[in-house]
Length: 226
Image (cartoon, rainbow, N blue to C red; front, side):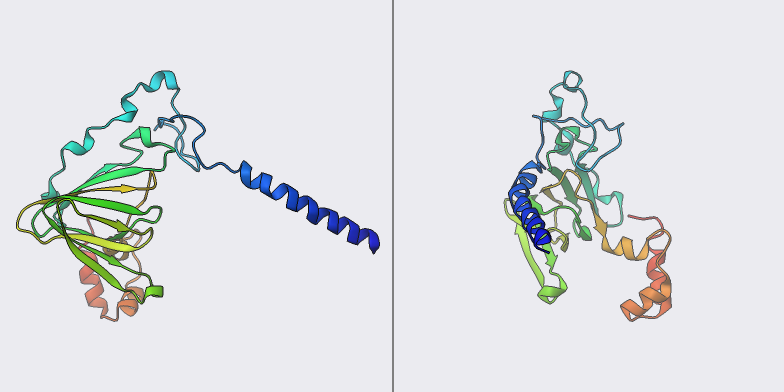
């Protein structure tokens, strides 16, 4: 019995000494100046494999992709997203950052959605946008909103549902950044009514407290995606 107590005490003392070393050995930060993504490779936990520095050039530092936005009338939402994540800007690989430019037609919206892997910071660059954020059940599903004009900013905590809506008479634009090279996106309406395979209608009818015909009608609006 005494020997068991001694071994247990020795184990605990060893664990106390080694634990800080294990913590120090965990290094989520990049281990090199840059890691330009080899998009032909298979992504791992923290990004794509690196191209050899000799073949990466210096273009990885720069991108002109966001200088021109897309056509906001190209989809029923009246908005267009120009993405600058790792698949469009390989230089952000392993750096934990990315950007988007979003352009809105008058009355256009970036529908309610969630970024499961990132906090979002945004700058309105043109027009007037209603920015809405919905808190979790813990907050009572509180709705936060404000109409922002050019030069004003907003922040969206990771995982909270939010949207933007052009309340002005002219086109509007914003630039947003994320603390993830691949923040992910879950469009709430599309996810609920346009999933593949579809969520069973009785489930949605029960959850939304409406008739099945209403659910089927809404589903028919999302057969082509966004």
